[in-house]
Amino acid sequence: MEIKHIIVLISIFYLLRSSSSSRTPLPSSSNNSPLDANSSTLDGPYESSVDLTPDTSEGGSSTPVAPDESSADLTPDSLDGVTSNPEAPDETVNSSFSPEESPHSPYYGAVDLTPEGPRPSASFSFTLMPGTSNPELEKICKETELPIECMKSISPLLNDTVQVEPITVAKLGIELSTNMSRQAADTATKLYDDPEASGGLKEALSVCIENYESIPDDNDLALLALNEHNLEEAMIKLSGPLTSMETCLDANHQMHNFSPMRDMEAELEALVRVNLHIVTDLVKF
Image 1 (cartoon, rainbow, N blue to C red):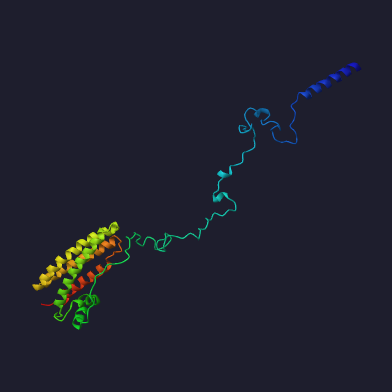
Image 2: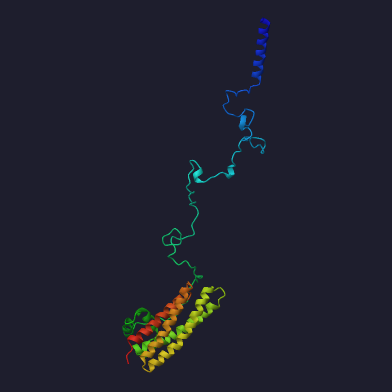
């Protein structure tokens, strides 16, 4: 009986031992993750459905690659503590803009920035002889819109044989403007033939030459009308030289030329205005 009992106990012992050796070992208490320390896959029923094997195509390491500093996002939002203000401009750099030409100026766009033609070093002008004071001429010139220019132009033409009256002064002025217009046409032609003249200057000069050359014909017709006591026709013909001078000045303005004949143009235009004013307001028949 005791032998049977011992045999039963031994059998139970081996059964228990065999049962304990066939059980699945529990995970270590120091690691609560379902991943084994030396494995990257899940144990149990999830083993075949989830692959947690790290990508080892780059050198076999599962350590994340550090981002390339050269390709890092350097936008202001991504930088902590870095100011986004642009660098201040270098104060040593001189701006090529004048206050009106600068894009930051309130006057920008209000100023005509079209480049001028080359500025000549000197301006051509007429050579007028100095005149003498004449009270009668002063009275006539004061009635015009340009009394100083009137005295300057007409006084050198007076002598003891000239009777100073409006019709005489008008004729002297008309003859003088004819001579001045011819001289202006010759000067403009020489400037036009200069190989260093700019295209804009040449274009304006061609307009001026054409108008200078038309003045003598208008003046001759005006003198003829005065000799016939036809004031209306004389005024019409004298308005032609004024239109010619204004056309020449407009051509220079449109081409933005600093005309080398600016003094001649101003003197001739003033004389043409004086002649028209005297004939219109002072000559009586």
